[in-house]
Length: 527
Image (cartoon, rainbow, N blue to C red; front, side, top):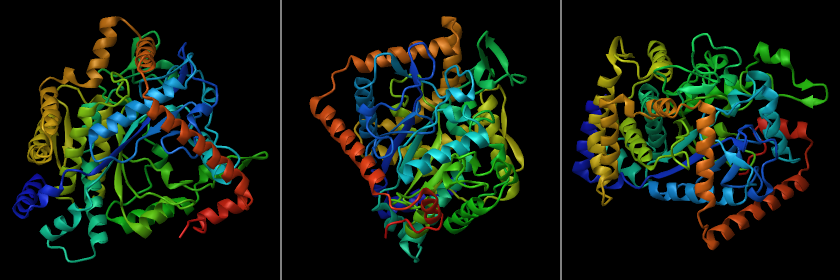
């Protein structure tokens, strides 16, 4: 598969197509639990000074009222993304009460039970109620603790000017939109084949508070009196105790192309599921699910990576994809990096961009059932024991050492990094690749190993260490001066978001039940 990537690069360089490769759009979505100074989950509402979680473009909530999600715009430079995320942290800490912090790890703080996790509230509008009921349904289906896990999403799209040039290189004479869709799904299939490398290199959750396991500690080792871990784990967040959802194992969502992907997801949203039918739609007078089907909404399906298209008001994501095609991909496999104040390392973004381009250019046949088994095996194995000496993954019908496979991937990325570095002065892509090469030769450099080493060296539990680090990050942001113009810009957006929520709440003309019926029938989307 890597030989085809090199052949394509050679043809692209011969035609000047590689000149259009840098400058794609990228952005981040970063979640963090909001906690008290004592490390318990905050029970206060989403701060009004942050604006409306329903309508603010950059500051919202994910599952919980105590799980803020910071969203950057799409930028052409990784440095712009990192700077915006940094400024957003400055603002939210400036407006956050002094007795609250942001937990700086993916796996949650100590949570005594599911009810301690408050479900996000989006107000009285129909769309706000739908978002809330969807989350209530997740509680009934999977419990709240899993939903309190935080992660980072890296969004990426190739430059618009790249696509017609690449289509010409590929001698494709069809419609450009169809070519783009096929290309993004080729990227997605290869990311599914190779995406294990993300938790391997960047996983930062090998240890959890024992309370998260709820007594299910059989296969885990006690790290101390209040922490459990696996010695070679990279990302328990990405394991079967985290986002891996056994209920969805039989979904068979197809990545063969846009039409089969949309069809398979749409089918899951209308297919009844016995366990959820037993729950029903109501618990007394309270609506507890949007439906009793395999999926309530497309977003309930978890995957390492998703094709995405910006949606219009009232529009279903699958409708947007079907109508207007793939706009970008959302890579969802990053842990919160606890050692960075923002939870994201700039150098990691450079690596991910080059890696996604490799996934685009490499040979990408459809994924057969036997290969799907290998993909699932590799993902879970790396999450649970990715640093195990001599670990071997499934590659086709053979086993290959994880370090050997990663080294081959790195070699295939090298010419891509060289092309991307032409638009820079300090070769950050090559530097990012070399950092990971060094880690491959010394797995103790990986973030998951570094975290365990630090806990042992400082003789601290996961909870105590993360709480102290969260306080350090909070002091860092609170001691910075927020430029007046930046603060004013955020305050203006905050006020606008509150007004937008109020307008939605006063402008509804449908009952909630009618709203849901119209939504699922596709009658709410704007033309």
